[in-house]
Amino acid sequence: MREFIVEADGGSRGNPGPAGYGAVVCDAATGQTLLEAAEYIGVATNNVAEYRGLLAGLRAAHTLDPAATVHVRMDSKLVIEQMSGRWKIKHPSMKPLATEARTVFPPDRVTYEWIPRAENKHADRLANEAMDAGARGEQWSPEGSVAELEAGAAGAGDAGAAASAVAAGSRAAGAMGVPPLERSREWGRVGGGGTPARAKPSVGEAPPGEERPEAPSQQHPDSSGQQSDAPGTTTRGWTSAPDLGAPATLVLLRHGETPLTPQKRFSGSGGTNPPLSAAGRDQAHRVADALARRGTVQTVLASPLTRTRETAEIVAARLGLDVVVEDGLRETDFGAWEGLTFGEVRDRYPDDLNAWLADPAAHPTGGGESFAEVAARIAVTKDELVTAHAGRTVLLVTHVTPIKTLVRLALGAPPESLFRMELSAASLSAVAYYADGNASVRLFNDTSHLR
Image 1 (cartoon, rainbow, N blue to C red):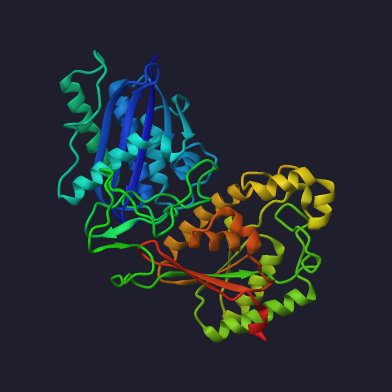
Image 2 (cartoon, one colour; image 1 turned 120 degrees about the vertical axis):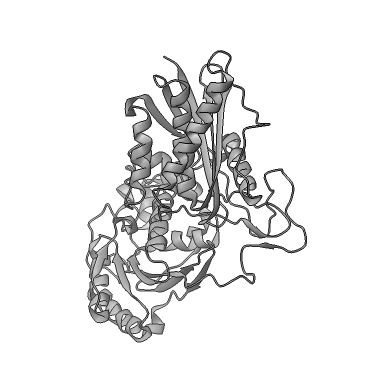
């Protein structure tokens, strides 16, 4: 039985925006490139482009040998985790794409592996070539490609048929529509004077080892490796831009105090799940009055934990809204540290604490969540919410780590910035997300303004 390696990627210059995918099939034994596929797919999101790349790669492998086994390698944490069955696919528009991908080969003959994007350059280059072709009003052509069909595996006619089948299949996938779930993406380059590079994921979205995003002021090369800094080129960020419509505004509310809050004890999703204290309920009523005066909140979402649900119910009752529970907003599981103060953790687990402070991939003692894992969860949740609530204002009643992570991702700040933020009980912050992927952050972080 033959074994293939499929590497796939996709990107969108705008998210959603002009999009394309690339996929390459290699012989697992020799590493030889057998077939390449790429296509400009019009306006789509990063996620749909990535899934389309996956489908194209699987179909290309199936055309070469339908009895083969396939190992898929992608730098999309979202696609890999969903196709591996470790992450749920919540949005209904994403499910058909995943379902179709699972039908190309029997599931027991396909395995999935996340790789850093530095190891996915071939598929990334093909995706950029497809987007470049689309910008010229053309479709990508395999002519001049570096693909080398294995001798005897497919003749010239078979290779052409395979490429045609892949393109036809990808167009069929596009007929399903553009799923609204999008990954969080970092700074790209828009405007004239150069071809924009594929947008890359934000810090915290992928596991440790993937490159961190560049600062907005850094230049991004086009697919030819040339810098796009000609006159007229603009960088995404605080610049003039066309009307992008009303943003999706996430108002971030930390729950009110619990008995553990004044003692500064670790209180995550794996502890005793404490309720609000009397002070915490008073804080929730005051923030409810403040939000009612503003009159902008249209939906209330809450973490499933008791303290957040109690806070959300008090606020929602004042606003005349219902509370929707969102599991992705839950606090970090702090493992054996739950209920302890920082000093107690330092005394009992000094090595584990030092590792946790130094590395976002480190876990609290006893198998809690790492900050990297929490960031990946929060990034996916944020993308779902931003897409589902475009143009609306949504109140997220959640916890310290999710709020700090949302702010960190919006600012493009490194993971260690979590330790440099102070967040009071019942404090408010807000992040507005615009159609081009930009975000603006507003911080209140003090309950005194509610009195």
